[in-house]
Image (tube, rainbow, N blue to C red; front, side, top):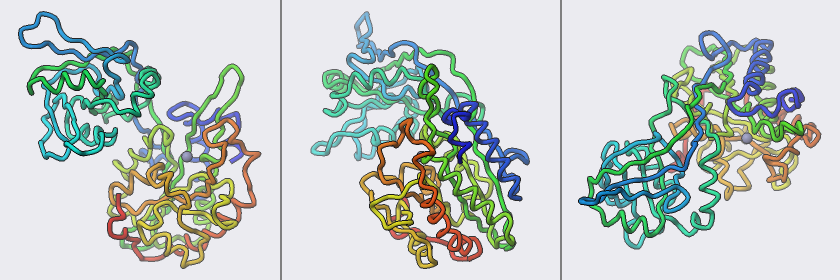
Length: 431
Ligand SMILES: [Zn+2]
């Protein structure tokens, strides 16, 4: 953990060479513990294709009214704010869709999304949903909230983005999301479906690169296939200032979780072989929205149906004053019987005391949970002020707490990897 959070690793920036060094180090630890490789072609590392993109000039939305000689042009930062470029420059027919009205989204359409009468204003999540249905671009009206940060949203588009790439390493096929000013929205609402709309989004040539997961495995002795995954994320926010030599060390976030998974690997690797297969998954690019874990969920080393549970370790380096001493909490506690079962076997584990923070959806576990695997995150993050700051350093780690907390889990987790019980979602618990 000292090494992972050291300046030598420069903050383990997502999808950077520093992240790859961290991954290589973790792989060598797993090897030393007698854990087999389960990444790419007999390696511990799993290269996940990602793409770096940078918008070079303010995008425009254009269309030409019937009979008009010049197009109407709306520019990013003015009448529109492009939240997500998606495919980049594209054109397609206008399709007006009312949320909940049940209209099927046309492939490659420029969908103008509106709320049903009397329903609350649309959110980004509404747009994401439609974006996943084959549209080229999803357009929606501004909200008061977005209007208040229109300038910030305008600026945000120009920062470099790292996104999941297709298997060929190209930009993944996802829809753009564009917010229209009130007047632009009204104007477009009056247009006929089918009118050709164009999004022009100049960008620098995208760079293909990789983020890295590290996957290790201890094969279980049971002939019936069943696996438990222990996970943590190995990346963090990288360099704060190259000039000052300051880094986001991410000692708590999430070198502490990696240390917990490595400790489990050490204990399970030297002991008798567990009945179940145990996978150790250290994910890259969690900080960019779970790119490594999403890839893992899409390309699992064993079929997802065989994964009985995943436990993610996130920020366990300091005690959370909201729970008793030496205790860790589990996100999504009411969602499944996993937490209560481990507690019944002696784990000092309790429910997440900060449900309003929605941590269940904020870590790598989510992408597996979404696909049905009972996957939850263990943490003791007490909402400290060093979160995502350069001050998240090793000197703030409470090693006694970490020792006791991980120690209290060893027995219950050894039980879990030898048990045959299959943890279950409670009704309505699976996201
Ligand atoms: Zn984290």
